[in-house]
Amino acid sequence: TTHTPQMADRIEATLTPSPLPSLSQTLHLDQPSAEPTPCPYEFCGNQNTFLFERPIKLPGRNTIDGSYRFGSTQSGRRDPHHGVEFLNSMGTPVFAAADGEVIVAGNDLTTLYGPYYNFYGNLVILAHKLPDLQTTLYTLYAHLSEVTVTPGAIVQAGEQVGLVGLSGAATGSHLHFEVRLGENDYTAVRNPELWLEPFLDETGSQQGALAGELIPPAGYYLKIPSIVIEQLTGRAGDVLSRVYVGAYEEAALKGQLPWNESFAVGDLSPGWYRVYFVKYGMQQREFQIQPGELTVITFDFSEKP
Figure 1 (spheres, rainbow, N blue to C red):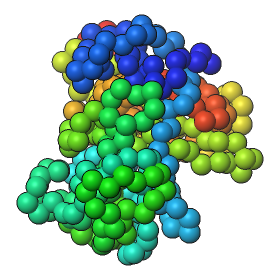
Figure 2 (figure 1 turned 90 degrees about the vertical axis):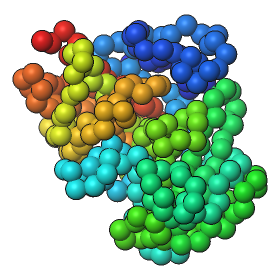
Figure 3 (figure 1 turned 90 degrees about the horizontal axis):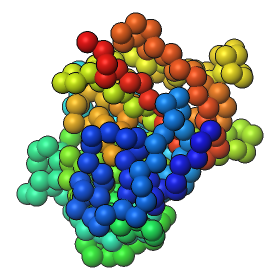
């Protein structure tokens, strides 16, 4: 694989040459010191991108619910998901994903943090000014049964900020977790699967993640409900496992910096994979997940009629 700059540089530059503005322009930051680094067409690996710890720790369920991923609507049954869910019992402790400042600790009955009032219920929002990054990151913890921090408090990674609940628009007890880039706004969300530290696999190797960029024809919005990701025994080998995802179902969530992705999945064991879906015929690509890396693959349909 080709290794691009580390996250501090990556945040300041676009992933691929494109007409999109740089992140520094989008967030009104100083001009980046590094030139944008092209990603090879097939795939490329990126190190040091997983900046956040899991907000749920063992013996709680610290895995992401795969039935309602970021950008999903569960086939139109729910609102487009702006975060991920950790399904847990009432009262399970919730922890800060990184060092930060508590900027919200309460509820959204009178202040709008999402699409409507009382959407999140009891919630905590942290602002993170992480080393080497000019832009601020935010994490949001929602549907809590209890908030255990106060506004203005400085918390450390792994410090408890609340307890799992089902307040607000929750259906069943769980933690709703969001990552917001550059501003504390519902429209500034990013897929947490690309930011949360991956697990170790059964061999002790750190897992990785995949971000898939879909470049549509001009003026088009690509709807791809079924994308299959298969782990192989070797390149073009037997299938070990499959994961099914879809392209983000809200157009505004697609193609956002820094990864420009339209679909993503985390916690993939290192090795060779194959991704395929139907759009302008059958599309297929093989790629490799390296330990502790984010792999980006690109499908360019810009020249399609």
